Length: 404
Image (cartoon, rainbow, N blue to C red; front, side, top):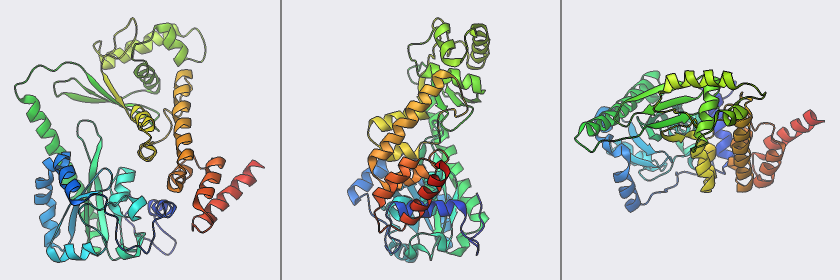
């Protein structure tokens, strides 16, 4: 990620994108404090139950003390942007209170405007935001550096680790320190899992597999043997298609059924058998038996999680987790059907939400930039007084010219 400050020629792209998102969400740049979304009792319970509570003492020892020594603040948020722990010297904490940078406040960009914890949360990668890059005026006296912390087993986003302070924060060394502390926390979580796995316990059985393929041309697969051993694979495009189709058919598929879903032309059964043999060699006979072909494992996948969020009506989290269409280059008939079903379901949910920030996220993506109906709906949802109205009108004008 670029760490160059804004120059006379404009903002960094990720900061500009965050400003658009903040404006579309209705964040008031003149608002002084970030909103509180966890009251004192809820904060205490949520914090005690959070996985990062296990490693917070380590983070405080490694990074929190360094923050206090240099007049900065260390903060740890959950995956929703809610600050669970905020540490610093008393004088620095009092200063941070004036902008609402306190435990229980929410620094998601859609609520607090552009900031490093919110940016790292949305992008899933380290982020730095300097003074005037913040969307809200009250925060522009601060600089911050943040990085995500992930679950070492599932790679699920647990939260964000942040350092906030003066201009001394806006240097590469600070980001390196924050990233190192986050990796230490992940390593400690992994160590605790291994320690628990080593304790005498009833034998565990059953394989677990986690598949990531949204926006990817090749699936990433993590396999857990149920005894603490875990390995990762990047599959070929064809093997990625087969894995998706089998994961979407829990009762299995015959060779003929699978061939119809994988190949556009008939007569590819021998080719499919060869591909399945190679895939079985990678995965093992235990995970991929035949007659019918099926995956004998607990399957978790990013597209399955997105489907569940849509079913629960959580459009915001579903859109945040959408990294792009399923295997976008695949022409396998079964993959095309699954890809289009999920894409259209999410699009319909975003349209139906009538939330301008969600529509803005869609239209600023590579797959939604030319979605005329979404731009129209976004304009209607914004209203005539929104500062985003002129940008949306400009994009509609562009599409009118292109379509004509």
